[in-house]
Image (cartoon, rainbow, N blue to C red; front, side):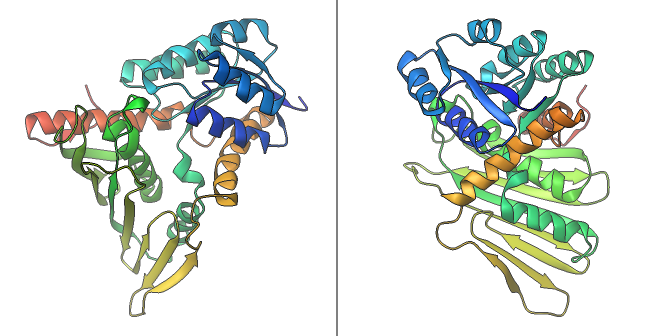
Length: 327
């Protein structure tokens, strides 16, 4: 196929972000968009000369699509993804993949038995500094990985329908797994609802099959409405990496001074950098369809992140480490 015809499901912030990214992806064409808010659907459709719908099922049934982008609230991800897959469409689904392992398995099974691509939008794998960090790790500049850490302070946008684990920690679970190059073996965590009706503060220790370990701390503070902050470290036998993911990446090798490898300035993730990040992600999805191969972040990878979150919650309830896989 010359171009992959895409339908956008959900025209809120995430849906608009996906649409922007697909519009910068040369081999894709936005054909239709769907949102229960008719005005929102019409506004996004007019921007990309697409057809608006108020029901994604009607859009899928009436339009000649090859793929859909799912940008609905996360409790609806599984239902919409399965519906699209059963209608023969490839699916690009926003994180978190789903809220249960049963939903994840259903999505994966539908994609596999129909030879369709299911890609989970774990966008940090396409953030420039995170990709540079991965390259440095994989090329041995800091030796064998010993430990990794992330600390993040953020807000809880309740309109997303996610707590701090599904909405925020899922990013850093995925990034740390990707950097570590290994699957998680055990999860020991604490999580609670301290300043909202959601899980809003949480901390966990992860151990990996390759012997590495990691800590993830995610916090929400009352009244926080800004971006907050995030910082990650990767410690190896020959050095360490440090990044805030948005603007700076540092490398310190054994016996040397810490060096600023990359600075993106105060603009950080906005403007062209934001466009580049998300369009790299959608390009991978489109290329995987055209080339007839699995995408870089298939459903199986998204499922691993959900399993870790569920283990984190279970560990918090029992006060004991939880071994993966979950039974």
